[in-house]
Length: 246
Ligand SMILES: NC(=O)c1ccc[n+]([C@@H]2O[C@H](COP(=O)([O-])OP(=O)(O)OC[C@H]3O[C@@H](n4cnc5c(N)ncnc54)[C@H](OP(=O)(O)O)[C@@H]3O)[C@@H](O)[C@H]2O)c1
Image 1 (cartoon, rainbow, N blue to C red):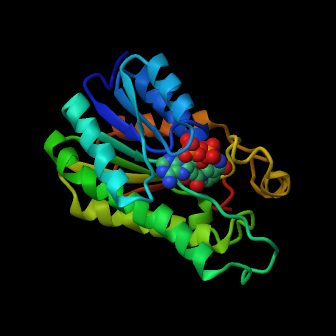
Image 2 (cartoon, rainbow, N blue to C red; image 1 turned 30 degrees about the vertical axis):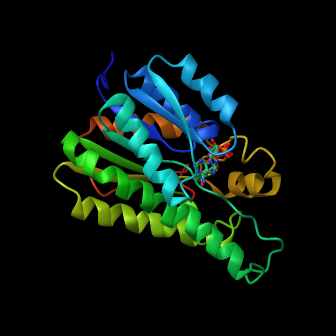
């Protein structure tokens, strides 16, 4: 059933992994999609051409002008915006096990991209999501933003995801009743990004009660569920096999 028919969604960082899977799932449910990435332009155009009603817009969430342009081009093409999935985000592994082993420049880069970038495209989208009257902001954060024991991530990454969790609550408080804001905080999900993270993957499997990693569909099914469940607001939903909870 096309439950999201007549909805328009931007999925940032949607040429790979979780974002690609979310874009496909929203499209399968009838939504019109904006595929986005920075570098993988050809892949983005190909994906957009394969979906029923989709366009590709290149741009980085870490660049203010790009955020404005991504939203403007969406409105110019589709005439509306109903769903913003803030999936794009950078990771930075520490060079050693020493948490101090990160420069100010690297810390700032991660906060700028992940936190300020997510905020920036959200700010540009808010007037259009309000106009929709049934706007949804879904932030893809991480269990690393909740549980400091998730040793696979850098300190800056964890702090950035914690900040987006808080941003989610703030948006939920201030953007209603026309907009709901929720976050999904995944554990380790097998994507091109994590396929070489052997040590982190093994640590995660050992500790998480389900003893396995997740797949992108574990996240995408929740994105659709959040959009359909129109009384969910301000939630940070862990999808990590119980890793951060027990
Ligand atoms: N995989 C996991 O285990 C896991 C766990 C917890 C949270 N997450 C979060 O889930 C999200 C997706 O992760 P993933 O594993 O699916 O990553 P991925 O496979 O590396 O895909 C990342 C996507 O984001 C795009 N991108 C990167 N920087 C961008 C920017 N500044 N602006 C716009 N697009 C950008 C990439 O395209 P280009 O490189 O071509 O720009 C690509 O399409 C991230 O926010 C990540 O932190 C992932």
